[in-house]
Length: 87
Image (tube, rainbow, N blue to C red; front, side, top):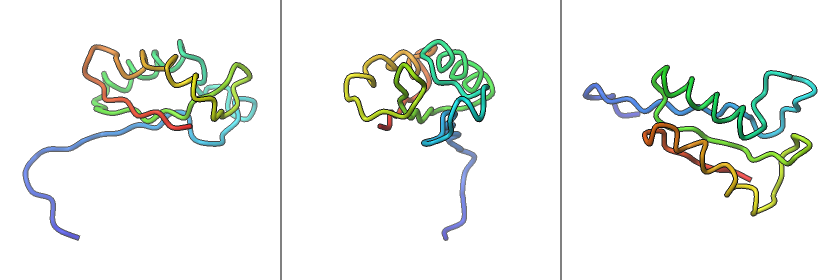
């Protein structure tokens, strides 16, 4: 592995996890409002990118390709946080 040079660092957060259930971890952000709030806090703490596993209305992981459009606001927080959806 090459040594790191310079002082640049990209912090990425993945607050939802791929398979964690809200029933097992009530703090898990699964709704759009929860994800936006989490994104704002992460950005304030220095994160530059958020990786989101999309959830359905029952807070379960979903492959519904229509759902990612609803989470576009998550990455748009302040216009600075990069956003990566995952289904």
